[in-house]
Length: 409
Image (cartoon, rainbow, N blue to C red):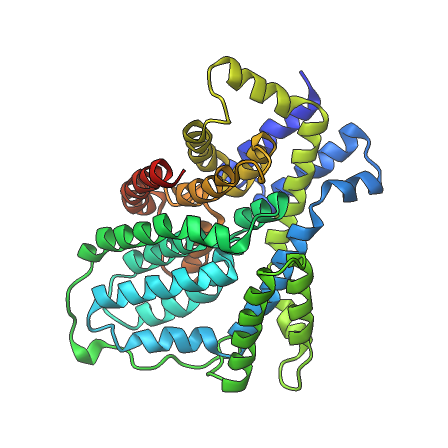
């Protein structure tokens, strides 16, 4: 049997499981080990290793993490969370505004980053109230995924698609936003009945305690973050490469009299970047070995033509829930037409892979971030807890997406 295929199967099985039984290996470690094994098998040198990495995507993600760190250390995230606390006597309304805030921020700052920032704040607030925490935390995960579908910078797989296809930022937003917003409303409507309509006012929190990682609002530092984000969006509408714009803005934020640069860099999610590096190496190996082309040929023989948008997106949804949406998109990109010939194929893959991430727990890294951080703070969300909400809401949102694909495709 082809050793490249063996490493690929073992790596993706590990990614699906999330760990290797008996070992302290997470998805980042599994992806890196798989990539290094490919290097040994194919006898790559350092030049070939570097060539396999999609540096524009890595730089884009890195820069956005720096910008998100500015929002966090400027107290903006804590301020947004605190502003919703006055609604906690009406949990269903609180859930709506929390999900909307999460979705909009995810569209601008990437869902994984928003989940990293919001989960601890939300857990702290819920632990001091009588609101059931699990529906709210699941609402955070669902809404961050749905909101992230709206823009090229909303999540890692969108960034990868945007960079690989050189997709138009505004065109992407206009096509992807309607199904994402409808999905957000459906997700809230499904979760809301699990919360009480009203709780006693004396049980409502009015303020979160400040901490070094969750400081009070600094108006200047938060304004600096907001203006930087608005400038970045403006630059995205130009022909300047997105990774240059993002790194330029991130570099500007490092120049500060108040926030030390090591604090900003310290909040970069190096695990996620490592996961991407490993996946890029694995993907490059299966392309070089001809395995990906053989798989696509086999699907074609079965009548599954990836040029058919309904088949492409159905495969995307299934594959995203086997290996998670980032690896799934990496596998499907080579089968896409040129973006100049059919940009809808690229847009639809971004939406379907993102919506699919809500189906089960392992479908999205954002889901795992929420669950793992909540567990560390004493709130346990099981696979079944997620599935009870994730499966029905995802089926509803996917139905809306296919309806949108029929209308706008």
